[in-house]
Every structure is written in C-alpha cells, then in structure tokens.
Length: 130
Image 1 (cartoon, helix red, strand yellow):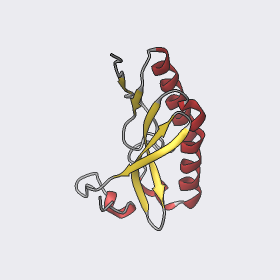
Image 2: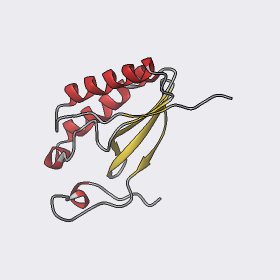
Image 3: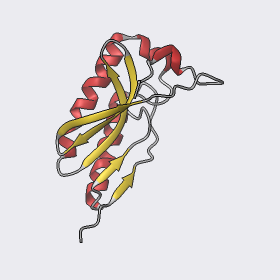
Image 4: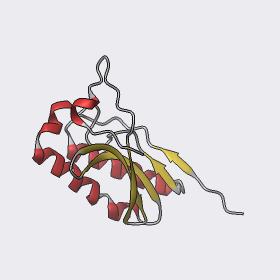
C-alpha cells in the first residue's frame, strides 16, 4: 500500500513582493520534496501576499503574478502543488491553481467573497459560480 503525504506550507509572505514570495514558495516546495511530500498546499493569495488591495487595479501587477505562477511549473516536477494566486478571463478571480508534475492541472476560484471589516474582496474579484 502506498501512502499519500500531504504538506501544508504556512509561509510568511509580503504583500506585493512577487520575487520574494516566489522565492519562498520555491524554497518551501524544495523542502517538501526532501520530506517526501506528494501534495503541497499553500495559503490563499500566497503569490501576491494578502490582502493585495489596490495593487489589483494595476494590470502590470496582475500580469506579473500570472507569470510568476507559471514560473513555478518546473519546480513542481514529481509532485502536486496547490498555490493561492490570481486568475483572469473577463474578470479577475482569487484562485487556487493546481500545478502537477510541471504542468497546470486546473484551478478552483473562490466563490464566497468576504466584504466586511478589513475585507473588501468584492471590490477586486468576481465570485466564481461553482
């Protein structure tokens, strides 16, 4: 019988520091690989830092986040990584991208967007329908 080893990467990222956040994610993936992790899961919006707020109004920032998420693909060889990032089609989504063995396998977009207190996600993101 083969065991499935899950890892949860609770790392300290900085809002807007795409290069620094990318480096921390890559380091966590390498550490998980050394520990024999099969599936590694990162927090919501780990690529941008949370909450990115008005940085999401800058098209260049969004494009950079999408590119940095793609840049993770070669680091996922031999494992599955779920990473909190952005997705864009007509609208912008808070999403969890599933990267598997060097390829994009799919995603899940956030459905319930908080809009109270310090949370203002409805201002920036569209809600997924399913």
